[in-house]
Length: 484
Ligand code: 5AD
Ligand code: SF4
Image 1 (cartoon, rainbow, N blue to C red):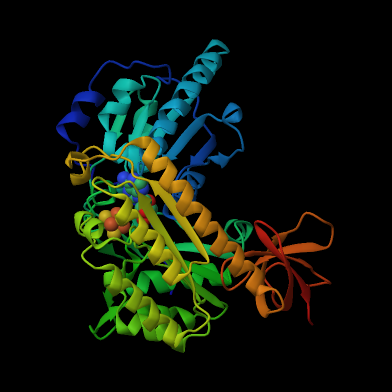
Image 2 (tube, rainbow, N blue to C red):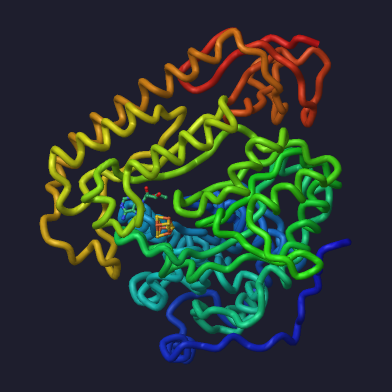
């Protein structure tokens, strides 16, 4: 089965918000106007998470069909698209400072008689909408994540002189209308690929913007996911990472109408010829069901690596975060997963300095990290996000206290990461070769635990899975010798 790739030229026009109608009817403020030559070179910059990486590729695919070629620098581009992240304050600020630079470049190009279109996509586009058009007059287009399939249509409106704001939720499924790339394009992107299976979140953790920027949980249908996996595999992809803001909330129906969960989906995808490795991210502890846990026991293709954020080790803070589980539930869950897959490497996310966090609460986080043991982790200072319940809580923690706690937590996590890497030395593993290394003849692959591994390739090629013995560990990667 092949994926539906038909783009409906006459699909329903987007339902504009009142604000959208207001702005698109306003006087053009910037220079990409009527009679401009069609822009054909696009520079797409991606911020934030893996889902944005996936979305950027799908936008490139939609633009490719309209004749846009990707370029590596803003200076060469007729169209610059920023695919943005809103998760923390700093991420959103980066966008406005990038827009400042782009405004200057646009002016410079205009002086040379050239037109540059500037678009903002992603979660900042969704969250800030018309505010971006007000704050950054050089921006021509603001497009939210749910309507990327309408990007060519939106750009056509920009060409007609409109400043377009498109942040509504499309009635149709964008994935049904986004074109698939040519096999050579897929192959050039590498032997590992992301595949979005679920989008949005209904959990409403009190610190998080995702339920507002990505909307409520939506699962893509089984048949569409399987056909996308088959297309990727046919182009040479060997490893799939299933993506979702809350990926283990994925659910769907099989051909006979039986309800399936992520464990079942993984079982199906493990059967796709050519797919040798599967991963998934990001999971919520409350949605790790028995079927998913047993998939870690039953499926050799499912890599023994799990990103399972807890955010804090303090029950008081977990409650205030609306995580709806206790630290002990998480520890017990990890033990259950490890009991079926002993070599599972765990990764997590942590927030320090959530409102009301005391030294005692923070100590509980350190204790949890010590008890669980992480191979890898991401940790952040709490960042107040307007519109989230956390923003209105009393007892916001001082920035200096957050910084000091983050430093202590990161020192512990780094120590665990290094200990995990050292513990790999001497082990024999399968390595998926992904890209050329720095030295001639060297290739870089990924271990089952997602570490980069350098190996002297001895005739093996990118896409091969080879048996290697780990011989050393550097700060960011491992070294290995081929065994066959
Ligand atoms: N402040 C700090 N970190 C945050 N995250 C999400 N929202 C915030 C916030 N307001 C972190 C969480 C989440 C990861 C993707 O980003 O740890 O798991
Ligand atoms: Fe945000 Fe919580 Fe949903 Fe994760 S589970 S996306 S942290 S609201």
